[in-house]
Length: 361
Image (cartoon, rainbow, N blue to C red; front, side, top):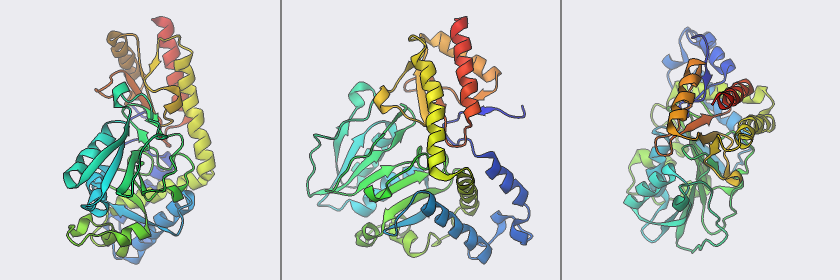
């Protein structure tokens, strides 16, 4: 099959222009006679790649000078531990807002390293919505408030972020970073695995306030688990994932070429609207998991009237060249992950398939 409609939840679709640019340079990067994968991470040729990726991130996300950009390995799952290692001292409490499986895992890791508390949760309704923090109780003992900005399994998303002054707001943005405009000033730390919107798996972007990094008491923290190790060494303390950072830069170039964040946010909203309208106009044949006020523009989760119909729909979708539409085992049904690189045409094709299948059944 020459091409497919890629709705994988991650690793996910990458922009074709970014892949083509990488393909063109794969064997001979910048007239070096070597692939970028073969360059020394201390070389001037790689340093240019490294710095450009940082500068494009800073430009596209309007990252202020108060924050540093780090390239870390280990995925968001390592950040579940790295965060409390750096911020959760013995006299502080890590506050967690539970909105799905990934926030539960973040809480579990934090609980291994210090005192934690569930500030708010929507678990009792099977994570169909984002909880209201208007009645949340904060204290001067709070080390941070951790949220997961988008929930891939349940298809929910923080449409607006809370204003928290009592402690740093920390967000796992692995599945919706770079998908919309963002006020980075609201956050003490943002972290995101690259494999949804930023690039290939293997790179984790951390955007952290410099004052948080500098004030962290990490005397007894292993070197590679300190944010300061990456900040002080420009993410070059050891060999970084050079090809992943290179391809991340290519993705950022693509975002800039299509008009930046305003255009990208508009495109993502349009894609999501195509599929959500199909669900809403199906008279219950397709049932969205997330409440409308908490719907994600990145992961659209829905079920059919019964499991037999779900299996038949997914089988037909596979025959037609749709990939990655199976819902997560915890909620079943279907999931369309429509990250930045998924084109509108793919969403229209899915809409047409959904309408066709409903009419036939």
